[in-house]
Amino acid sequence: MTFAVECAFIFIELNPMNAAAIESNSDVFVVVPSYNHAPFIETCLRSIIGQTRSPKKLLVIDDGSKDNSPTIIARVLKDCPFDSELIVRENRGLCRTLNQAFELSTGKYFAYIGSDDYWLDRFIERRVELLEGRPNAALGYGHAYFVDENGREYDSTAEYISTWGNYPDRDPRKMLLRGIAPVSSTLFYRRSALEVVSWNEDSRLEDYELYLKMMQVGEFAFDPAILSAWRQHGYNTSGDTLLMLDEVIAAQERNFDILGLTRDELAVIQTETKYRYARELLQNGRKGPALGLAAANWRGAPGSVDLLRFGFRMLIPMAAVNAYRRGKRARFSA
Image (cartoon, rainbow, N blue to C red; front, side, top):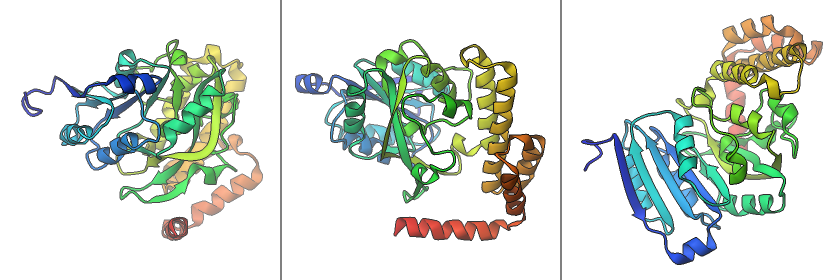
């Protein structure tokens, strides 16, 4: 059977478990949902293989990639020293892929990472230590590097603590209600917590709604160390700001009963969220949509000074903004 002839469902057992692996690493199950990330998937997989604490198993589900991702995955997993498995099938979407992966998982902890991202070598070790010491935590998370298409680390979420990157420990409610979600490559779940929730298969944004449900299950344990990387490139969903905003608002509406808010309180929070997304659009150079969204939601601004700054930034040419960012990347990489 070849990938070209039969891609409806291919199961490949690439590296059988041995007794020692089961005994020493029976607590962590790692999943990589793969889709059209051939340039990045090897880096992702080798970051898992090279962990200081190996997982019990690595499951890769290729969700109908049109590139040669399955071939690369099969080649790299031959070097995996612990149990690994590749499933290649037709496209079903990320949320369905994650639900399938969780049904196939075992162990105490569950983690997944997108096929374009990667972990630093102590990620699993540190996350296990974090949750072992926090029995009331449903998950652990932290900061992440921003990485470009060429693998250069040029920034991190820790640089934005004064704005959206001020991630809380224990109670995530305020953060989530503002439409801010942890970076998915930093997440590490207690499997028993995931057993009472699931990914919404009708959502185009896999993580935000899950986090709203997870905050009812347990604490969010925060580790300030940077242990993972979030790749920024031309075709990842996180670059579509308006899609993300629509999904955040829709998820809040679907889960209104668990938010603990009145309709008026939620309306105020959503206005603030829309204004913050307008600022993000402006930062990305999309001045037209930014202006329209800000004009409709100016009451969500933190104050008049922020509105003045918004107006001033509308006047700055993007060429000057991009030059500043290039300089910042160069300083970060130095």
